[in-house]
Every structure is written in structure tokens, then in C-alpha cells.
Amino acid sequence: MFTPVQTSLGALLLFHGSSGLLFHNGVVFGISSLVSGCIFNPSRDNVPIVAGLMSSIIPVCLFAPSLIPDYPASPNSLGSLAATMGVGFLLGWGTKNGRGCTSGHMLCGLSRLSPRSLIATAVFFTTALVTANISGAFPSCGTKPCYTAVSPTGAELVFMGSAVVLAGITNMVVVPKALSRSENSQSIFSYLAGLEFGLGLLISGMADSAKVLRFFAFPTDISRFDPSLALIIVFGIGPSLLAFLTQGPGQATENRPKTKPTLSDHWKLPTATVADIDWRFLAGAAAFGVAWGLRGVCPGPALLRGAFQPLWGVATLGGYILGNLF
Image (tube, rainbow, N blue to C red; front, side, top):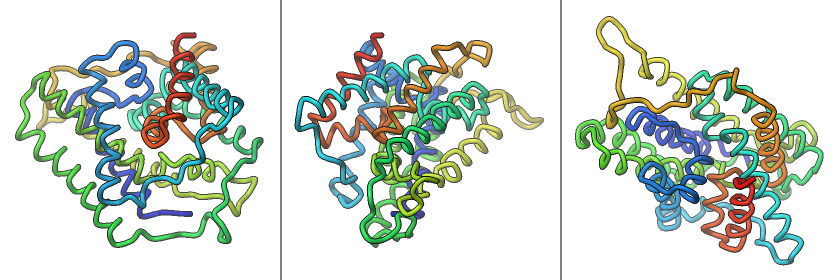
């Protein structure tokens, strides 16, 4: 169902997590590279963020369990297990060669006005849309059209609103005042950014594979079209773009010199340009789009779903690792 309030508040948390990591630690919140890094080269640059992301399920389970997605059943046969691993393989191979997914390219890349991320996003979003409409596996919303708006309960609204407010206070007040420019401070905030981002995925609906697939139902099956995720552009990418244009690297004015990250001495941003795009980059973005369109999952939401469905998570992660090795 259409969840304008929930998705908007979740998108603000995605903004706080991704922009906070950029402006405080100087790095881009690219989940696919973070997951691969945790697997193949764990370090203080990736482990705290992924740990924070996974920790986000705890407050949701404790205070707003109704926000936990109603996931499809885990694999119950060799065929479904192989299919799950196949999707994981496409996620791993696609994000490795496409150099990112919905977080690094769409949320963070578009907000940094990266032409390379714009091309990647156009490829994987179009591929996902076509794939989903060809497969036609759009989950039903029962007797009502999926574009019917629903409001959060009072308890959900208090939890979501509190999370957004606390994230804003943490990022804009607590971190600049309480943490110094050091590696330990970066690790602390990396965890907090992962926590904020994970809450954003769960609250916005990005972690709900059924909701993602319903977003792709346009224009084939309007009755099953859920427009919720379009609000991530407004409340996730929009604020990130504004922040980058006004406070980002090199944004100097007469009264303010070129900025540095709050907790780091320098920016660590992607340096690749459009000139670096090759067939593997485009094929990788397309492969990721196929996986996203088939199952409605990308690396971050896959980690969260794996926490609730360990068998599904092991199969997907196994395929993801294999995809990264090719």
C-alpha cells in the first residue's frame, strides 16, 4: 500500500545516514562496496557501517515490529535455493562491475551530480523496470489497489519521528561538538551512519521486496502500483543534493573557506569519470537491474532480510560472494 508518511520519514533517515557519512567522514555510502569489503577485506572503514546497518533491526523489533516487512518464504527446495543463489550472483557480479547499486549510484551519486552515476542509475533502473514487467510477479495488496494511501499508527509515528529527530540532532549537533577529528571518531560515526541508514531502509519500504516490486508495476498493472518509493527522490536525494551543493567539497564562499569533513582530514570520493565507463560497467549495471527487477532486493536490504531469514541470507550471500569472484 502507498505509505507517504512512512516512506518520507524513512527517506530522511537515508539522507541523514548517507550525507552524514559524507560530511563527517568524507566517504560515500556505497553498500555494495561496504559488503564486499567486509567479506574480502574487513577494516574499520567498512565493518562499523555494516554493523550499524544490521543493528537497525533491534530498535524496530523492540519498538515498532509492525514495520518489519512481510517477506516471502525462504527457499524450501533445491530449485528455489538455486534461484536465490542465482539472484545473489547477479547482485554480486553486477554491483562489482557496475561499481555500485541504489545507494552509491542513485542516492549518493545523483546527489553529487555524478554523470557516471546518472548513467549507471538509468541502466539499472530501466533494466529493473523492464525485467519486473516481463516477469509480472507483482504482489497483490488484497482487495484494494496498491496505490491506496495508508497512515501509520500512533506508535509507528512516534517511533519514526523520534528516529528522524535523533538522527538530525546527532549529525548536526552532537557529532561536531562531541567528536574530534580522528580515526576512532570516524569509526564511531560510521556505526551511527549505518544505524541511521538501516532504519531508513526499513521505515521507507526499501527493505520490503514486495513494495519495491509494486513500484515497478507501472504501467503494466496499475492496480498493483505502489508509488511510495518515488518519495525517496524528494526526501532522500533532494536534501542530499542541496547539502552537497551548499556544503560539499570545494564549496567555498567569501565568508567560508573550502570545507573539510568534520572527522577526517580529507575527502575520499570516487575519482572515476564517464571516460572510465566500459562494457563491464554497463553490463554490471544491467545485471544488477535484472536482480533488482526479479526479486526487489539490493545489497543493503538483502543484509536486513538475511537477518530475519538466515537460510535465504546464506543462499543470497553465497551467490553474492561467487559473483564478486568472477
